Length: 228
Image 1 (cartoon, rainbow, N blue to C red):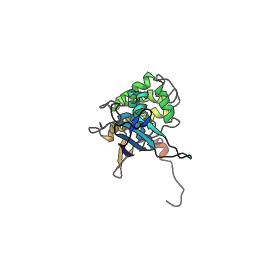
Image 2: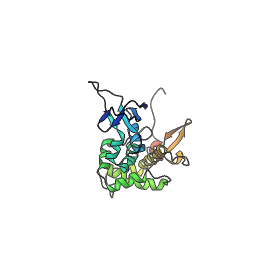
Image 3: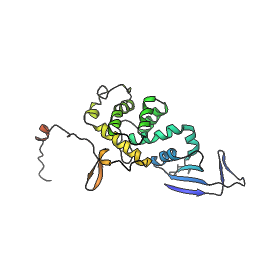
Image 4: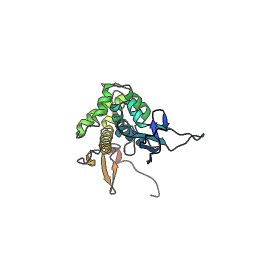
């Protein structure tokens, strides 16, 4: 993201005025969803004017500009804090996207103020949670995102593969760890306990603790390829 500092004009809710008062206005320029989420999460209402400008222009040369302070005031502090959870849970640079669940639909569910989803979102932003606490929330979160109720199990929704193969456990661990990194609270956490492993001297996601198929089946799988 590129930040531009402007002191030649005064920003007001109605545009730019020529009043003899000078204030500092910051423009964030970019397109990544991360940038908008972080600005909404960290922006304070009593700070200087802050705008997010898209670096993509339309055919007519226009572009989008978001008033971050005003947008946060409309959405509310709690919802903006919960955006970290929605962004990480539905897929970001370090967490996988959930098949069939987009950011827009997940955000709309959060806007409806469902108490269960809000409670889960808040829990994912609390430091020093245990892996067990995060895993206990996974069924509620996944069931809700897939259109079920928080009392539904993944098995009854025909998503038992997630529960049995620990896919959601590891995904939710990575989501929580990523949120703590964004909040600067990961210092005492070991990434190896939160859904990551080291391969070739770099961190890669641990997708499952179980084999892709039973050992008895894996032993009979063979390849007739003549070349490697």
